[in-house]
Amino acid sequence: MRSFSESYRDAGVNIEAGYEGVKLMKKHVQRTMIPGVVSDIGGFGGLFAPDLTGMSEPVLVSGTDGVGTKQRIAQLMNKHDSVGIDCVAMCVNDIICCGAKPIFFLDYIAIGKNEPEKVATLVSGVAEGCVQSGCALIGGETAEHPNGYSLVRKVFNVEHADLGAYVDELGCTLGEELLRPTKIYVKPVLAAMDVADVHGVSHITGGGFYENIPRCIPDGLCAKIDKSALRTPPIFSMLQRMGSIPEHDMFNTYNMGVGMTMIVAKDDADK
Image 1 (cartoon, rainbow, N blue to C red):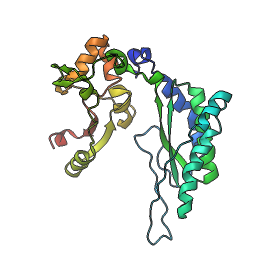
Image 2 (image 1 turned 90 degrees about the vertical axis):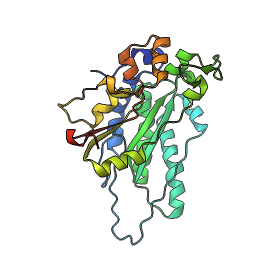
Image 3 (image 1 turned 135 degrees about the horizontal axis):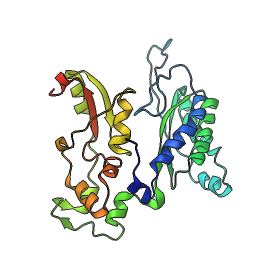
Image 4 (image 1 turned 180 degrees about the vertical axis):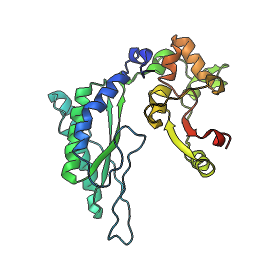
């Protein structure tokens, strides 16, 4: 099945544009590959094996920063190939103050409308900054925020809804449910890995089941989901009903209450 949500697109988020953007940026990312990179973009995390030769007490130094309102000048000039260099510069110039050598970089792009060519141009600047500083661009995120609106906000009309009103179906207010924090799976997943041979793990985020589960399955294989086994919170049924959203779009947009999936041998499933 293809990963495509018509409802999400109608709310202003085009996930297929995201795929095209990744395709276009790969040639820029390739320029930054250095020894130690052991992954390609598109995974759930970037992998890097550092060469610690000659270091008696290795220390990792991290830094994060952004371009700031200089980005507005780029927007006004419709020139987006240089601010990525600024983004890298702000980070690597900070850590070099500690005498640390940059080894890898992750970028984050928040954009009102995903125009693949423009995103790729932004990434070209990030890649150039990485080349100049000798580090690898091993991952990142492009988040589409159309007018601050998404499918949830559209369906529930949150700008005008009474978020403090109690909803029997949810057992709490709508606002409380929509602000319910994401479960952090680190400890339970590590515990599962201790007792079972876990073959693959998928973090179910934007793109839902259709996009994320296949990312840890080898080519030629697929997954069959037993929907009756899912413990789907009532917010999703409410969202689907009020928004008249097809089931495919629900599973292609939300995690349906399943934030993490693991692939194990049949004999390990109960563990």
